Amino acid sequence: MRPLTPTRFVDFDPKTLSDIEGRVVVQITPEGTLGQAARTANRLTKGALARLVEAKSFEKTKAGDVISLAWPAGMKAEALDILVTPRKISAVDARKAGAKLAARGDGKTITVMAGSMPRAADLALGMALRDYRFDDHKTGDKSASEAEVVIAHKSSADIEAVYAPLAAVAEGVHMTRDLVNEPANVLTTTEFANRLAEMESLGLKVEVLEEDQLEELGMRTLLCVGQGSASPSKVVVMHWNGGEDGDAPLALVGKGVVFDTGGISLKPGAGMEDMTMDMGGAGVVAGTMRALALRKAKANVVGLVGLVENMPSGNATRPGDVIRSMKGDTVEVINTDAEGRLVLCDVMWYAQERFKPVGMIDLATLTGAIIIGLGHENAGVFSNDDALCNAFLKAADAEGEGAWRLPLGKAYDDLLKSRIADMKNIGGRAAGSITAAQFLQRFVQDDTPWIHLDIAGVASVKTDTDYAPKGATGWGVMALSRLVQNMFEAD
Figure 1 (cartoon, one colour):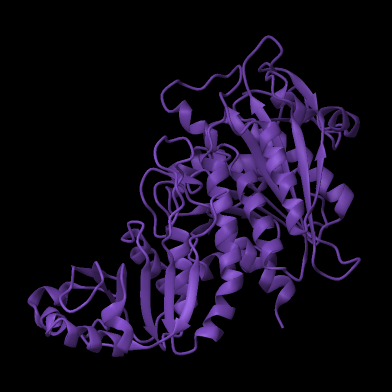
Figure 2 (cartoon, rainbow, N blue to C red):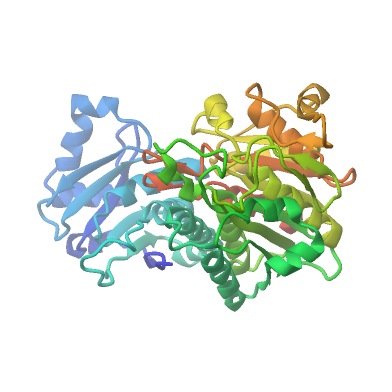
């Protein structure tokens, strides 16, 4: 993966403003009050900023807006970016402002004259999150950029210390985006597993379970999804042991369907190319584990991903087949395009049997129905435990990642009844996201607090978001890292 653009923290000195090259950022409040660096810039530009705030158009500006002046007089900078921001700003708003600045960067060094801004580290995080591109498969000049982000602050050492763990999370987000954006002919199940194994260099312990081991464990529902593909199915287990010895870990489980044709229940051709993102849940688990390792989280967390490819062939699972899960329950496969739950249920059962986790969270691009219900603004949240669920929702809100809880209940569960097996793998069109969650809940042990996150609407999008260019978003890495921090690392 491409490294983050270097971020350097220096002492704030507005007298250096005239000689800074690239892009320079100064601050003005929504009321038009110029910050210290902005006053210096105003003097250098012979009152340009004063005229700006006096203009009628300035009344329409909002907190977080960026106004750019090209080739400002009296300065060497190519552009002077005026960030409209109140003196007191939330972490999320500071990150969104940073993302707007980064979107204007155009490969140039950006120097932010942050002064005494208390949320400067969050501003830098927003810049790191937005400063992302996926051009690995484009030809042309791939020479390394010499651009950097410079944060000039009155307490530069303190802000740098606050930023360090945030940068680790940003790197995890970028890894998730890389995985989700990668085409399926590159990110095969084997290549995915290899990339995860490489994270042992960060201190993770990584195990790759091959098909013969999965067969021996009884993971037949997972294996039935991939049996029509030439790519071998795998389960990868990532251990981060940063907590106390013997403490039960939090288990993160991700759906990793590297490409989903729908199998015998073939999807329509239009839009099928987007199904390279059907491993989004596994991508979030991978990015979260990377972030935890890089920031040396004081917690025990295990990440498990089921890696398969869902293809039609003479050996593929058919609608009407009955498969026995690792748990022992039988599943009548009504639709082979409802494959993600077949992958997850075996991995979830394995995670509980082996690790006895303090809690379990699964993530999956599971249903199109969640997009109908929540669009691309929120992931669907389902849970059997109010305390764990509320803790996650609080973490997601703190990180500005949309999440909305939806119900579970017996009436929905009854829709999964099968005439010939213990359950069907779908419950019909009505409440499709909920019946998918009900299916998974059947594989959650009574004493396991559990959350299911349906991220089909938020994993990859067609337009820019607050933190990311269009494409993979990396949604969930920040929220999960915050949840781990709140659950295990709070003083």
